[in-house]
Length: 404
Ligand code: MLT
Image (cartoon, rainbow, N blue to C red; front, side, top):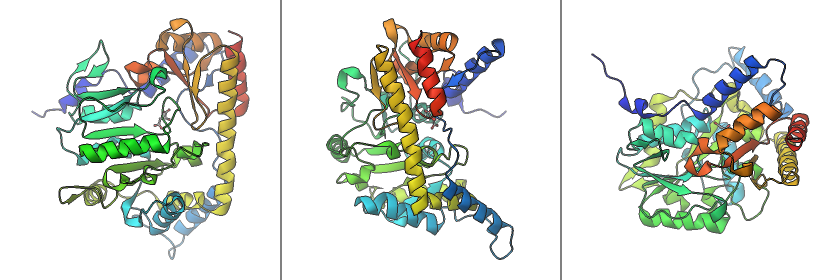
């Protein structure tokens, strides 16, 4: 008789955004006349930029001719894309990352869930609290998190680093020493970030502790302040302790196109074992490469026209962020984030719980957001709104919230 991976049975509830989608569908089915504004999941709304569409069309045409047709993509990514990534995202910022340290994938969500596979079962993970749920859930599935306490909504073997208004959303070094440290900066969900000096302290800490930082930089395109690093490799010593995850979803609107990459520096080793070689082995075995058409689209992100168009797209979303932030402040809310990230993190009014505020906003303003407690216990009493809606709906949502 076969057995299942019992670790899956330990997972409480469904994936956060699936739970929300189900709740929202049920509400919409019961109230078909209500027009909902969705500022919940961080899904983009603006069309793919013209320079990227043009590159995709060209690649589609190439696939229709024998001379230019492509089959399996190289499993680690096409050279043209890895070269564009290295030149634009790293060398241009003074980070000495080379093409064979870049692994192209179908997005940062899967990479952030899969990366734990190359680490030992007994590794202790440390996460910010609140946190993007994929980091914890993927470690639960791998059996690394111990037992779940439904009361505190925490796992016995996970080290939580609370990030709240009280500590200015800056994680403190944990008392117990972790082996893997997940950092998402700019942060999802709080929309806050660390300065380069603050991140340098984490790099120094990880090198000293012999820990690896899994650095999720999916939102780096939204950074507006100069002392905030775009890559962890801007910090000295990061190549011996950090893996960086990047996404094309938020900077180029690829949530439905799917493209991302992971950087594993060759200097990152465990004894004489190279993590770069391990990830290459894993990628080669389990992944057949992102589609050629999509990788050409990715290359166009770095073209002059692509860069100019995407700068406008990011500015569009950041105008939404400002609209939400200022609108909420005017209505008396306490708000964070929204300056270097497309997320606004607010305190729920009158000490309402996060889920109560979710229901209240859904039923009374027909606005969908994300309850802070869905990201971890320290998210209780907070709520997240995304700036990825369209501008008209964002303005309308704020009008409705103001009228409550
Ligand atoms: C979010 O809303 O947190 C993100 O869209 C989720 C994701 O990127 O997978």
